[in-house]
Image (cartoon, rainbow, N blue to C red; front, side):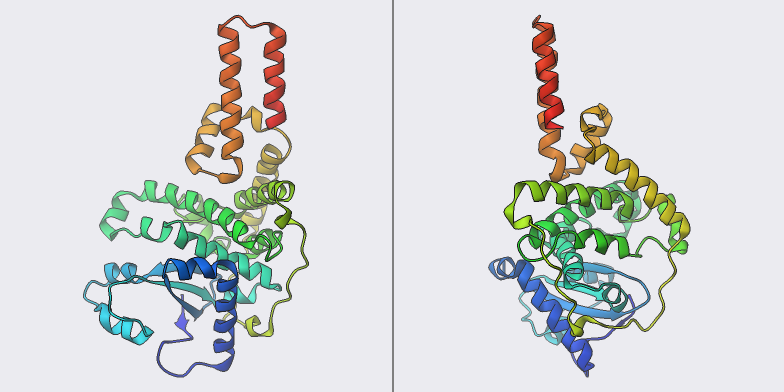
Length: 321
């Protein structure tokens, strides 16, 4: 991640203090009441580094990685009582902050990480090193599910507060899995994040659905990025890989066609099963309803219903999808 720029003790540059204050304000805007209600202890840390990244972690993760470490000194440094309550860390790099030109985009990144916290993903992927090695395929699949759900929950948290299309531009700017050095890892299936082409298509579909269902999803003017968050990264990021860009375009086109152009009813049973396993909130209800109507169609056929009745049921499926 790089060097911690706002240590719990010691001097902190004024611009870093201002950035930390702005991030805290965004956190409170997005999910402040829930954090207070659940008495969640959240520390905001900013790291210097060339990688565009943000993550949510906790003290349990640290102690499992370094069992010889004592919890008490860390808690005292952070200003918390040694009462055993888990401390969560929202971490962002200066590089990820330097990517964006609106508060809305940074709000999406923060909301995404908060979603991991509230959905229990931090604990779910917090396994011992030995267990991780034994269960790499299962852990990889779970991580993909978590990212999709976190994207959707982030947009829900943004409703009525920030412009939803910022989720698309934020994802498009992220370089976390797009550098040339990460390409082989992505191809081998070891990355913890969905490729952005898939996530962009799903986010686009979610925005379209929210716009049609919720008045809070109406188009809003982007909130200009406050000066306090205009932090220049100390190091230059790795350039985007042309191969990632080509693949992103292909995935975005294919997934968009299937999700946005009325072809959901053409999914194979295997594809529907994958979507159901992912628990994608945007489509789950539609998929279940389609499956229900298809079951009705099969029952009609078995019960000798007329061709006209079967045609009407097919029309219902097309309307849903």
